[in-house]
Image (cartoon, rainbow, N blue to C red):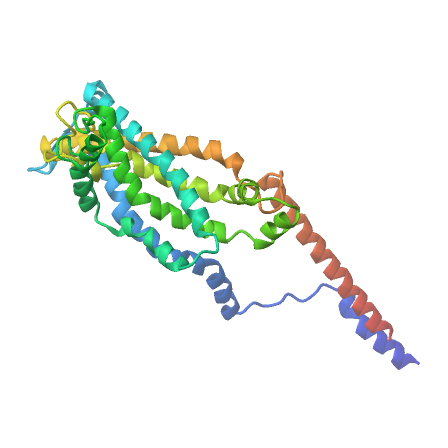
Length: 363
């Protein structure tokens, strides 16, 4: 009887005292470090290359924009914001900014509408789908200079294909090069020809990711194709449309190849009819050899694109459909709740361990 009581007492003693700390070996520590650091090591090559080829040129351009830079001596004199003041005081800058926004709007809006329509057609059950999907990408893989040369000849004032066709139909010829708005339409047509197929494939991929059960349920409920498109397809495309709009905005405000090759001089027209900001930047930097002013103009364009991108983000972020649960808690509240949940789990585990130890001692 006494031996049985002593055995029970000796068995229950470890549970009443403090638990012996568990030693963590070096291999387990190394595994923990690998789990925490390996994701950063995997993505570090991209950020290292981006810092060398992206961030450094941007920072170097910012330094040059505050100096009267001499390319021959590779040095300059610090003059502050004089380069920015000179750029903003030039009437040519505001003309170029107006032309840039005009070409951007004339190209991006029709391009987006046409890309959605073509993607919707390619999403249907048609014959030779792979052939048609590859065909829409052909203009994108063409060299921009080749596209600009072909279209600049098509929109020639005297012997262009477009004006010849209009005159054969009894319509007056359009001064594609002398009229500012007509030149903007011609350049926007080049941009639409080259980039519509690219955006079409992006939107097509988003359309194919929509579950087909939605369309089957809508068909059972009696909804036709137009109703399915506006009620199912377009709401599902909102995140992709935001991406397409932002990339089109960045590319449209940086347009250079098409206006550069629109005529044989590449200066934006005799009266700056189609002069864009990037084209004027090129003319100031490599035409006038004034890289300080060109750098200031580049940074002004960068800030304009950044501001428009932020505005687009704030306008369109409310339109994105939330695919997961809606959570209005702040990050601090979520972290505090996670810590409390973790403590509860540890407390429950300790209680279960003590209960198991007590049951083992009572056997």
